[in-house]
Length: 186
Image 1 (cartoon, rainbow, N blue to C red):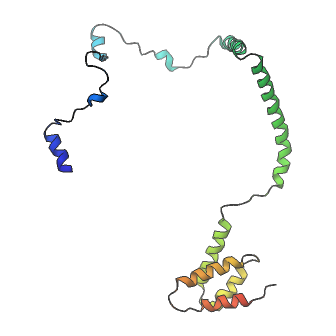
Image 2: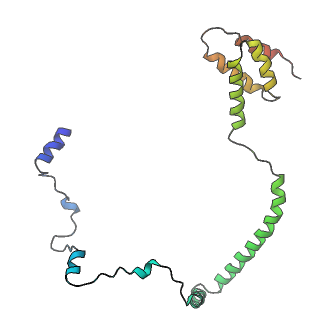
Image 3: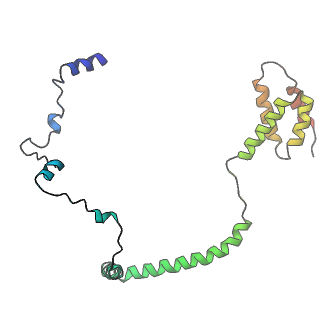
C-alpha cells in the first residue's frame, strides 16, 4: 500500500487530479483571484492606514442619547408586550431576592447527601487494610469489630469474602468469617 503511494508520487500524481471534475463547480474563466500585495502599494506611494486610534477605547459622548434611541426603537418593534415582560422580570427578580433571604435559614437545615459512595469506598479500604495488616485472624477480628459500626456488617462480609476469594489455599480468614457470623450484636 505504501509502495503504491510512492509510485503515484513518483509519477507526479498523473491520473489523480487535485480537484475532481464533479467538484470543480466554477470554470477557470469565471474564477477571480484577489491578491493584495503590501510591498507594491507602498512603492506606488499609497500609504497604508493601520488605524491606530481603534486600539484605544474611547467612550461615546452620546451614549445616553444612543441608549434612549435604542429603547424607543425597541418599544416600536416589540410593542408594549416587551415592557410588561420587563416589568414581570424585574418583579420576579425582587421576589427571588426576598426568597433568597428566607432560603438562607432553610439552607442551614439541609443536610448534604453524598451519592458518590466515598464513605463506602473508604470503609472497604479500611477493612481490607485491617485484614492485610493483621498478624492473624484473631487480631483482625478484634480490629474489625472496633472499626465496623452497626449497619455496615454486610460490607464487612463482602470484603472478607472478596479477600478470601483471592487466596488459593486455606487461610484462617475463612474461620474469621464463621466467627463474625456467630457473634450476636443485638
